[in-house]
Length: 317
Image 1 (cartoon, one colour):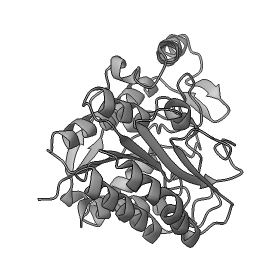
Image 2: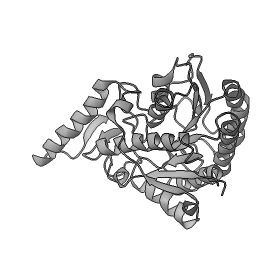
Image 3: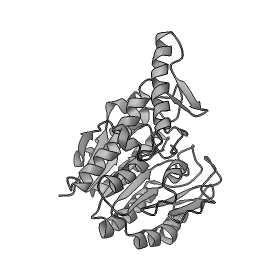
Image 4: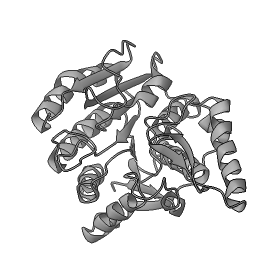
């Protein structure tokens, strides 16, 4: 029987960055409601995510960075008790509240628990419906709505704790996964393949020269045909040659044509097609092992439909 896991935690809804922020708890509600309404959720094995141990977060992040997020949270708690602000600002787009630390631990924990279950053969693949997202979180820095890099942590965990030799990270968010690149660039055990709108936040990636990176910058208004061509021309040959033993996906859905956070033109069928290509690579080389983690996607309806299209392929429903 085909088994796809779905990892979640109620704490993901408690992390928020202030009124009107696009990376909001309602994103998860939209996904869950649509999966429920379409019957897709019935096909999934649901799990509540555990908190990641700090020693595993250290696989991708420096101790000072981890300590600073914890310290900001503790300090904020004290400030609130004294009638102070409810959020601590990290950059113009990114702030934390008193629940962010726990949510970030569980977001990373979801990716790790999914990795364990997939490696054990209990699941063939998994989708982690997590907040906060992770792919902008660098080794020593939180930014771009991200605190810990869920996918980079899980990829290193598969190598270090499960003894794999080669894993792939695929990032189809509209924004370049600069944090993931910062953590994995030059690590020959990890092949990172991505496309992203360029020039665009966070304004990197196009000049990356590490041999384990397959970065495909695409201009604004690129549609599905351009993305599919990039996948076939750039990603697939490198993935075939690399033969990953497990595949991790930074699943951002903000390249959708209805999403105003970016200016690309993907639709649900494009996400389904990309997932099919990734799944075929995983079937050939990795015993089907895939762990996908939610990144961006801010138009609630488009996000929900795109996630469902992605999960339908993962779960064969």
